[in-house]
Image (cartoon, rainbow over all chains, first blue to last red; front, side, top):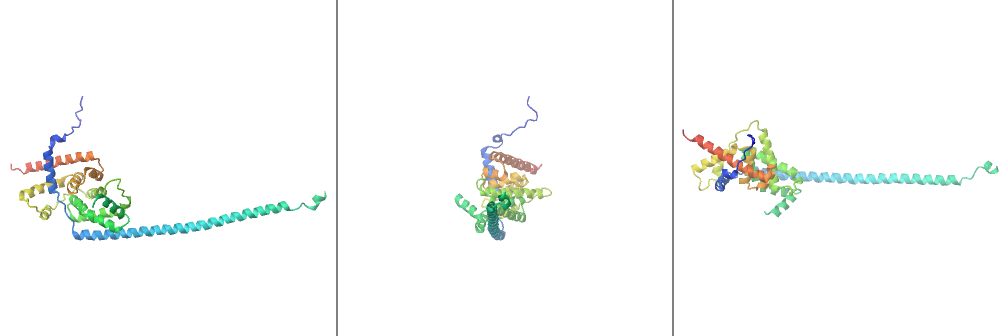
Length: 115
Length: 186
């Protein structure tokens, strides 16, 4: 059984023949004539937009330069710190190995050798 | 300007203010007209036009021509602003389109009183249409956008746009028929 609430879809071709549709379209095209903005508004907004775009570009370049500098300085500091840490560990390891060598070379006390 | 040239200009406009200025000059009249058709007020249309281009300038880096054509992308921004504008209105105002101005600017040789009256009543009927349908008509007839591009602006498929277009024509016809019947002397 068909539902009484079933949606009835329109068949558009029945409602609008191609000729009628074409007539409507030409009437609409004739009615919707473009409306032009005031030239002063166009010029002012154009000027403001170009200024805004230039200042944004400048700000972006400045930001990029700041990040570059931060990266360069940060990288340099990290390199120096890393070098110092490496040097420190190298020195500690060298000192440790020298101490171990010296301990191995100390002769046994005399009392021990007499017995 | 062909498609390739426009693509170059769009690519340049992402990092060249002058190129953005050229794009602006290319589209400003169409965007203004679009806003004017919705607001019916030159001041509001100018305000919305400015906001459209400032928003486009902010989002320019994110635009990729794979998504939609540049004009569809720009009209999408304009459309979002118009939707907000309608939302901001406490109630749906009747915005009189300045029909006399339109006709005075473009008189046309065939212009007659009857013709002007017909055009005026058609414009008034368009004015009473819901925002989406009005957008469709403006984009189709004034801006000559394809159904696919209109779909990109309104966030609908091409089929949905065709169907909406037919429904819009039908409702316009109904409105004008009712109006004509009401005007008939009893």
